[in-house]
Amino acid sequence: MKQLLQVDKGKLVRPYVALMMDVIGRALEASSQVDEVIQKEVRRLPPDCRFEMTVVPNGPSFAVQKQGETRLKYLGGKASGPFHVSLKFKHLTHAFLVLSFQEGTAQSFANDRVLLDGEISDAMKIVRCLNRMESLILPKVIAEKALKRYPQLQFKEKVAEGSRIYKQVVSNLIRG
Amino acid sequence: MSKPYYEFFCPVKVVAGNAALEHIPHELRTLSAQRPMIITDKGVHGAGLIDHVLAAFEDSGMEIVEIYDDVPPDSSTTVVKNIADIYRQKNCDSIIAVGGGSVIDTSKGVNILVSEEGNDLSEFSGVGVIKKPLKPFFVVPTTAGTGSEVTLVAVIADLEKGVKLPFTSYFLLPNAAILDPRMTLTLPAHITAMTAMDAMTHAIEAFTSLAKNPISDAYATGAIKKISENLIPVLNTPDDAEARLELAQASTMAGIAFSNSMVGFVHSLGHSLGALCHLPHGLCMNLFLPYVLEYNLQTRADAIGELLLPLAGADVYARTPQADRARQAINTIREMRDELYRRCKLPRTLSETGKVSKDQLPKLAEMALDDGSIIMNPVEVDMDDALAVLEKAW
Image 1 (tube, rainbow over the protein chains, first blue to last red):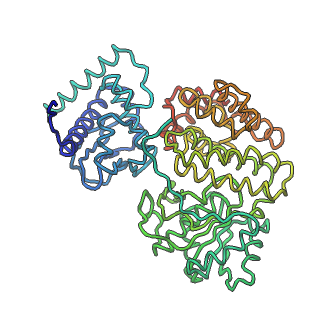
Image 2: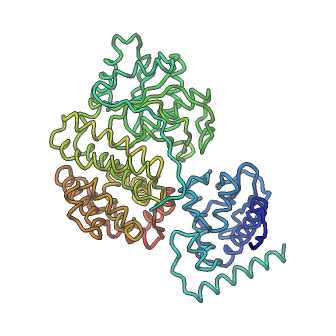
Image 3: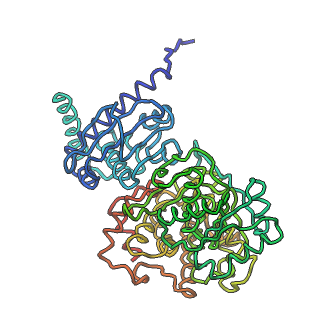
């Protein structure tokens, strides 16, 4: 019988979730610098609006803050509150399900895996920003699992916008 | 559709039927309460409905300590604070809310302040801020629609700050909901129709939402069947106590369903229309329901098709081919709305309300997209989709 490589999934979940939260936070920042649809949503957020995604009680997290009219600034994984909107996964496993694209964000809400604290109308704008960003940077086959409906995006548009976001992430990293 | 995970919770005792009000003293005693305060509004008091509650306390060895009957249609933190002060002055130990949505939400707010010994309601706003059981709290609904007697939320306006404060906690759930047919017997036809369609929408959106689950489905279909079978008979014979009780039960069942499965795009649009054009919630629900169901057909045709059975009965369901059931279910709702329009002038379109202008549609769409209920709609909605549905509803 073939010996399978033994991997302790439990030990990998936390670093994976932490890594994905870092990626999403940075991608959200970059998307707000290049994508007009996301900029339109950010414009309607209140000044200095702060958003946090975290896992209770002390799991990985990331936060972003509105900067200027249309941009989001990544605050890293250790920003302290208060936050206008806080999206809290009840357990690390629940965050893993969403961040490994096995369960969409909306379905995670529907499955009572997420607590939403703060101004609901702002939360809806931020969820749309997350959805838009995911549709641009993820391969279609994965984005379709994460979203209720994959938007009508031309392949060229998706590649061009996605590339710009990735470039912007790198540029932001270099600039610190 | 199978569902990998769900939660369901409803600890509210339902006390329903003939002479249900007379059970309140006993129910209070089981919770060691004996000095209840009634919270209601002028309309309910003026209609003589409080007399039924007072009569239920005769020879019970217990008295109503205070009746506060000045809850406005749009309550506020100031009203809540005033009532809490009276509760404390009179040394009350429990609350009986008698009324509709505003009275029930106000009473939930009062219960927070008197139980937490607070004075600033805003300190308790948010999800899960309240951490301990509150004072004994009973609800006697006087409309059959909101379902607030079985929900864990309350929304109360802070007029000074110009915001609506949401409160969500399991501890906001009443200890008991008292459904007595006497309390809805005198409800006027147009309010009966609006509130019934509110309950109908709760049930249908719960059954079609992203969070639908087998237990809330059972409550939802039960509620739809009761409304379909009893709304028109009640309009024909308003003092039909049995049919009135059926509607009251349907409202509570729909409340249990949607408080577990949530609502969707009908509510997103309805909340926006209600806020922008000051139209009653039930009217907005009745107005948007078929248009949103048509929009949701793209992913929920099977679920909508299943609704034909509770909506139209076994005969219609059996003779309608499976592929046509969803359309037929929507047609049945349209026919019901036509009948309500004929009898009560309940508007079916935005233009029929006479209170909406077409240039308000973009604002309505924008507000609907920002409404929290939209996340549970089974189909994603963007600005173009929302506008298209509003155009159809025009």
